[in-house]
Image 1 (cartoon, rainbow, N blue to C red):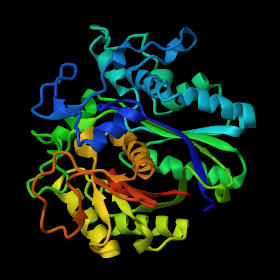
Image 2: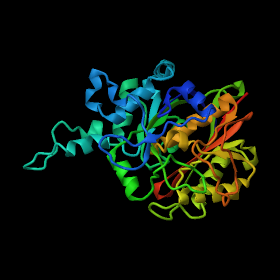
Image 3: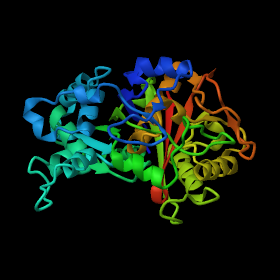
Image 4: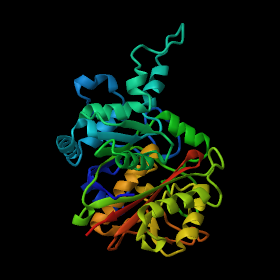
Length: 396
């Protein structure tokens, strides 16, 4: 694929708001996880909650979009001057030539969960104040972002569980290759709700401790929430500078509704496709940001795929012990973390991980380390075996 410039990025997670906060937290190995105290949830688990989301106020003209997910989207857009960078792109290309591609898993489902508590006692009807189209459905967040930014180009939501907001990079790149748009806002927004917390707990996939990816005693995920965005543009790669999207790869396990292929076949196919798309060999990758959820099965499958493709020859780590697993936002969160690693010249560590699983023979990094990175691969694998890998690179 033709490289695309990430001309602006921003990141909001439980670590804080903005790129500088995240760069410092990741450089010093901090975690934003805390024992679960979300809403009325009573579970012995840890979460990554963004502070102050409910205090965010949408513009009066967009009040019908009000929900926790769109408040989180707004908080993310307002960090790092991202809105201003998008509006400058609109000035260059026109509003019809800038698209919006966002990933989410549950979108505004919390609003419907709350509405169920207010059902009519006699009829069971949900309250009329519930606005499904603008405050619940998966397209709600994408429509809110395009309205807030004044964009009129192609707009879509991808909801493939935990690979959602990695796949939006590939979708946007395809539209730019087709010539339908000149730039794209890509990213992911996913917020805490009762469905994901109780749902993953019922599947016995949440841990009673902070997530420990690739740890020999790993026993589940810590669910988080986040908003991450990037502005993709065509640019003259020969001019150098900045961080670029070099390749994308997607695959399907076609194996099981909720379990990964036990040997990581789909994961390896996605990574191989991303490298082909970028025109790179495995030995040209300097660091891999693993999907690394901290469940026994997922880490084992990804570890086997990594070993088959890279051996133990590439440094890798998982940052989900810092941010939590932000589900539909995870792909974009970790793409922005990969961009930070390229910009600052360090490999993130793996907060939470203590004793490495010796069965996974990888160069897995527990602590942050300095490294002159040129090319980084970021993995995202979703329920049902929907996989995506992204290759990002720095051009000196």
